[in-house]
Amino acid sequence: MTAAIVTEGLRKVYPAAGGLAIPGAQPGWASSNGAEPRGGGETVALEGLDLVVNEGEFFGLIGPNGAGKTTTIGVLTTRVIPTGGTARVAGADVVRQSVTVRQRIGVVPQRPNPDRALDAWENLVYHAAYFGVNRKEAARRATELLERLGIADKARMKVDQLSGGQQQRLMIARALIHEPMILFLDEPTVGLDPNARNSLWEILRDLHAQGRTIVMTTHYMPEADELSDRIALIDRGRLLALDTPENLKKQTPDGSLETFFIAKSGRGWDA
Amino acid sequence: MGRVSAATAPWPVASIANPHPPVPAGRVFVALLSRDLRVARRELPFFLIRTVMQPILFVIVFGYLLPKMGFTQPGYQAALLPGILALSLMLASAQSVTLPMVTEFGWTKEIEDRLLAPVSIDLVAIEKIVNAMIQGIIAAIVVLPLARLVMGPVPGFTFSHFPELALVVVLSAAAASAFGLLLGVLISPQQIGFMFSLIITPMIFFGCAYYPWRGLDVVPWLKYAVLVNPLVYISEGLRASLTPSVAHMPFIAIIAALIVLTGGFTWAALVRFRMRALG
Image (cartoon, rainbow over all chains, first blue to last red; front, side, top):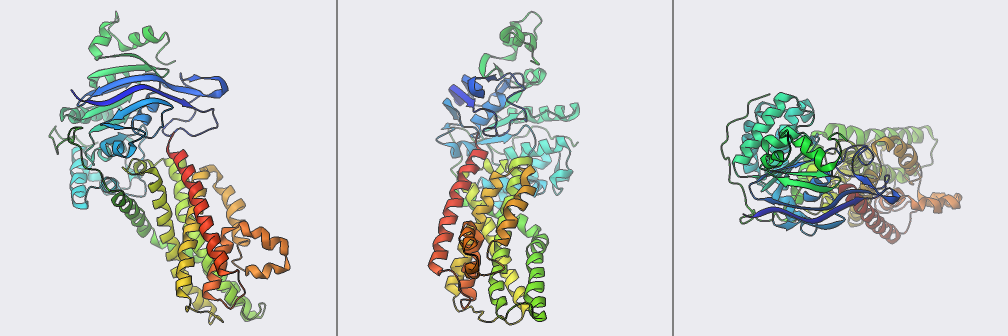
């Protein structure tokens, strides 16, 4: 089996607060989470993370807020430069071959960030153009994706007029329009109502069934349990466990991932 | 919310063994630029109002009414017209990159989809400069005939130095756009008001747009203090090429300053852009 992602000893230390902004990080990120502040105010977000994700796998990355999930996705999607270690994504190094990596991945962010100057359809067609897809083919794919994601009737709407769930679907369409090998989703169902969440799960299962590699972060255990082939449980930037959901659950008396996490980390899930 | 269609493989999934071929950087650049031009076309009426309104009102008062009332010396229009053009070019260039960058980086994060494009992060930033240059040059082309129309005949006005004019316009647009990008990646959304009152407004008034630089011979310390202001070289460059009879800074000094400023602003903007784009 080919590895889609390999990380070795991946480290990320953010400088003291007041230094650089952390792309994709939530406000108050460094202070309100479990990541470890060090002397001088530095924050260790990843501490030697080793992961292998196989091609075609649905890989769940779970952990509480501040575990290092968003930083991991940031490094793997070339948007965060690691402090140490290496990461290869879709056959290319995330630092030295970042352009190649970007060409081969699709990213669905934690908060939808569509191009607000464009309508939904243009968001897709222009994004495809950035990846060298010709106009006719981009138009065909945009129409088809909007149709498949159930938002074809919103194609000509300004993105501000779409609901949160619809914007999230648009982000998935955008992440897919250039046919990426690997799809990254960072807590894609945060803020979605149960209906929108269920239909997003349906979309993800569908994409996985087509053989696409998917890496999804979540701090919502049932989501990881429901969708993932394997789950990596991380906390404070370290890997606590990596196995199938069934095997992880077998290791606790009540068969719950949360109990497993508490046993492994020595702290509550919402810590 | 609409229903999701059933699982059907719409197109083949690329694999590591069989990846898509790399996309040439030039093609990505053109796509990024066409996105910005599409947005600019859609906002053209607002762009024209924003760009033309202030210079034309200024021209009506200072280039038409005051001369007609006899409050200005004959020949003032020859100093004013290039200055007004310089102002339009600089403000249009800077505005078309600064405000979008402040919002997209600091607030909506919508720049992300372009930062995910398979091209160097620097090229995404350079594209922003090129787009702003185009908008600044369009602003100058729109304002020139309107200003000339309002002012009436301008003594010494000539197109006979067209190659010099073209060089000045392109370099000025580059310097202003790079400066605009630098502001856009330095400033947070909360600091926009501060930027206008403490940076843009003093630049406008001390940019030798409303008076020629050589006129500052009467206030020597100010004559040298304003040299930190990029608008000075844009105004003087347009004077040197459009109304060369007005005493102006040496042309070679203007061109050298515009090249140095473009290089310096671009370098600083790229450094900061990378810092904002990458953690």
